[in-house]
Length: 455
Ligand code: GDP
Ligand code: ZN
Image 1 (spheres, rainbow, N blue to C red):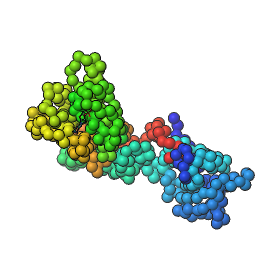
Image 2 (cartoon, rainbow, N blue to C red; image 1 turned 90 degrees about the vertical axis):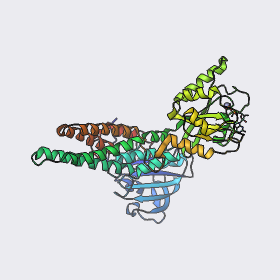
Image 3 (cartoon, rainbow, N blue to C red; image 1 turned 60 degrees about the vertical axis):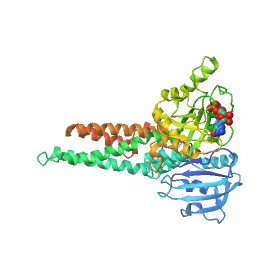
Image 4 (cartoon, rainbow, N blue to C red; image 1 turned 45 degrees about the vertical axis):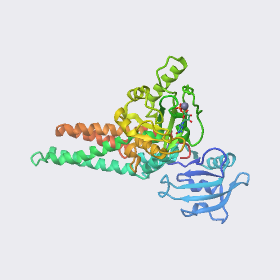
């Protein structure tokens, strides 16, 4: 997969396919103004090539071959290097709609522009140094963000938050590397061991800190699975409906009627979650019920978090205790359901007896405790990273930082001459990560192939 050529002028429809109020065709490259000159007539009569940057100019799109007016349009002007790509850029805003945009694009290519490939504008932004690779990828994440937390995180990446962190790590490693080189060059002068250790520790701490956000980042990006579990009639379907805010699953008071399971997307305070309502789990001879039980256990196993409902209006049963034992405490959140009814047991006592975390009192009927439950779910899924911190979401970034961590850990343990080799590797990996060092063309082509055309 070779990279597309640079230096020519590219054009693409920048708005999403389909009918829209406004559509945008974007041009980038040295011939942008010359191309636009041949297809856009400003009402003022001014020549396009002479337009200053930062203007919005009203005019007509004209097909010079037939003298036909294709549409009315606004032209936005940018000049190198102050544009998205760092090149001369023009944006033509026309009426939305596939026919208009297609025709404008055809005129662009007829007058000397080339159709842009996927992500080619952003690739040029990277190659011209306007964005580093991590920021370029954040553009892609931003466009693809499905939830508000994913959007916020991508925006942080684009705003250089990750780039800055990586820069600090790089500075510390570079310093240690330089000090070790100095020892090689002037062995008699010597540099105290401690002088290496502090910046090395600091860099390692930063790398570990970033890596610890990876789980939260994955959740923000892809969403998490939340399994509702509990005996029949514990209130699972009712709670799912309450979380959804509308009736979705079938609520029935006959035990065991929820045979199968049902999935529904829920937004938990900005975190995209797929809630899975399981059949009641209990030992039973009934074949249909048993298959539901198996399914429930399986779902709980594959979920990021299990929400165990214990009916607070009836005494705890052996099944409840058995369920707690089946599930790993780290991935379990326990709820005392139906808190609007007179309690049959005390949540605090149950917490101690069952050896679980805090038991949250929730009523699907009145909505009591729902807010606190959402907070708890979010906290368990994204942890501290749910605050203002930046999350690692990109597999490439995670893999690179894991490699950097390994190099740094080895360097810390190794004698100076070997440490230098690991530090070199760590710096090389960081350079590939930000794209400021050497990056394989293959890597670049792969990254930008995931973009849409026009971005
Ligand atoms: P599931 O079998 O675990 O899915 O339980 P359901 O959601 O089907 O609820 C079983 C019964 O408990 C139904 O009659 C519900 O109306 C009732 N129920 C569920 N949640 C609450 C609640 O918060 N308060 C009260 N009072 N009843 C509830
Ligand atoms: Zn149910």
